[in-house]
Image 1: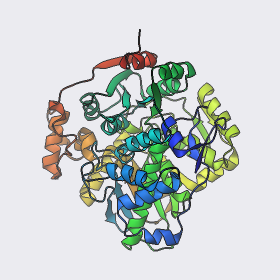
Image 2: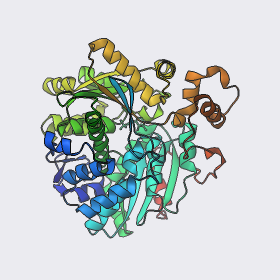
Image 3: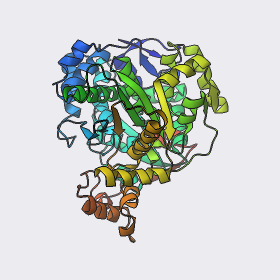
Image 4: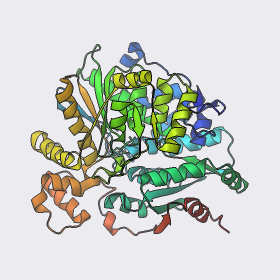
Amino acid sequence: MQYISSRGQAAYVQAAEAIKMGIAPDGGLFVPKAMPNLSEKVIETMFHQTYQERAAYILSLFLTDFNREEIDFCVNSAYNLKNFAQEKVAPLVKLNDKLHVLELWHGPTSAFKDMALQILPYLLTTSAAKTGEENEIVILVATSGDTGKAALAGFSDVDKTKIIVFYPADGVSEVQRRQMITQEGANVFVAAVRGNFDDAQSGVKEIFTDPALGAFLAKNNLKFSSANSINWGRLLPQIVYYVSAYLDLRANGDINPDQAINIVVPTGNFGNILAAYYAKRMGIPINKLICAANQNNVLTDFINSGIYDKNRSFEKTISPSMDILISSNLERLLFELTNHDSERVSTWMAELNGKGKYEIDENTHHIIRELFWSDYASDAETIATINQVWQGHGYLLDTHTAVAMNVYEKYIKSTRDDTVTVIASTASPFKFGSSVAQAIIPDKLGEEDEFGILNVLTKEVGISIPDGIRDLDKKNILHKKITEKDKLEATVLEFLGLDS
Ligand SMILES: *Cc1c(COP(=O)(O)O)cnc(C)c1O
């Protein structure tokens, strides 16, 4: 399988090269040249496979330059009981006949990012070895909170790699911040950026695409790559769990062969929902992809109007991992929906870069409206939904998943569609424990700090605090660097010992 750039100015490469580079040399994103198809016959053979077997098969369709041993090594090193608290890795929980929650947060950092970032280090180091890479790989990450810790956990002490994470100084929850600044490992570097996630992401993208800096690194036997969802190696493992959820529903008899499903995804950078779109393209019968946004509803407006306009105020919400105004993976969707028209995509991306705004053509917008439905939830609605679902189902949602649930309710009200629906649950409620506690036990919080609140919450709901979050307040703080948003490059050089 060859990979092509969404900007059309880069040579075709094999998967290993695409994963190693992270971003295409022309600034575009790599996508597979063609989409493999899962026939009904193949789907039926996968009903009783384990998550690992399903993952290995799906990965093998896209990573045609990897051999079976390499794929099995990557899959089994990532998805095991040492890393994931659930044998099923990504279990489906049935709330009622029409509604299932896909829990994607049983990995070490309690957010869905682990689903991809536990396997990415293996995909990347295998890719580097396969392509004869001699330089050490430097992973650069911009994070809205969850990617940072998941990437640190995945890459910590991985041979021949270094990892540098930038997070917005005031844009992450206390649990998220503690998770990152206490990360151990000889090859990890973490810095807070005075700015928001978009500042961090734009800064990192600039560093990536600066040829002079790339050459300087090469002289020092180093090479940048990305663990953000611009890297195909991040996106591919996410396709697996949507296919797997559908297989579980079929295998359990929750749906018939002729029934399609809806998928609701709490969306920020558009990576997770794009993976669901790719599952649909592979033949999984998906009716609507429901894109749930928070108050930063740039995607909702885009899906409904065809105009992407990031010129609006950046809102800090209680679902911080979705506080994003530039959804980088949308570029991949546009490339797919225009039948790989890199010229049109490049024009839109240039407009986004210049004016912060672009409008897609009517035909492309029509296709988007057929595939997607979108709305958003305010913080108050998010809190109310956590409370209602706890009272009604005894099921505790984190703030991001609650955004998805709230938007799903709006979808039902608006369309009366009764298709069986899967909600992607992207974080453990304990990761955003103070907001969750405010939703269900506002009277019991007193003067507790964030970690005190977790202890109150765990007693109240009878669910234990995940290992990676418990006792975080007692761990040593190892990373104290704060940097200005226009000084990211200097910070990178300082971390790498290349500043003179
Ligand atoms: C990253 C994240 C999201 C948004 O996912 P995207 O792939 O960026 O759209 C939603 N919820 C949580 C908890 C996250 O960590």
